[in-house]
Image (cartoon, rainbow, N blue to C red; front, side):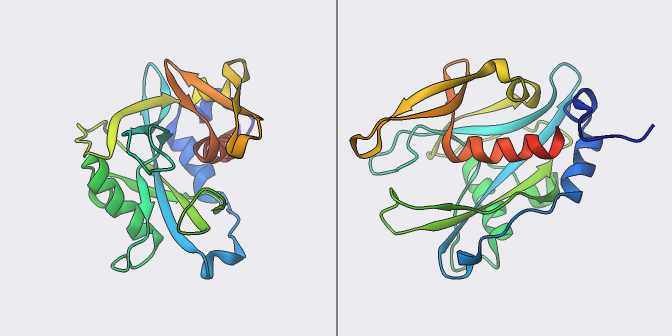
Length: 204
């Protein structure tokens, strides 16, 4: 029987099936990517018998002046002049932040849509490109000073809308109600949640 995108039981538990959908995905590219500053992140997927497919996230260390200080995120960062492209940025930042050589240990499956950021960045707007990898093994990770912890989040937890909550955020004093997840005491929201939502749309 052919697989369909709605067959959650398989796509969220079988990394091979999930990989097929990610490879076939056609992400959106921002036109302003040629003039904005660039950044990239890496989403690593791993399958284990108990949890199904999980995604690696990091909790950023508390750092003064960092707009993402303490947030749940993915390994990644700003493109450096030495980086050939944003994929090279994602690979370099992953190596630096969690000690994982993704060019050797992981397989690139594809990418998600560009996300443009605005307001809070002191150095102006930026386009972030997320890349998705499969990781055959959960290798020991060695977070650097920028990362407080690493954690694997089951995609089944994120796909269950009963786990989705609301949070209040007041940038510039204007209160907003935004979607989020609480995984233990870790709050997943904002740009990271936008990326996860697109990944789940691809798989589910």
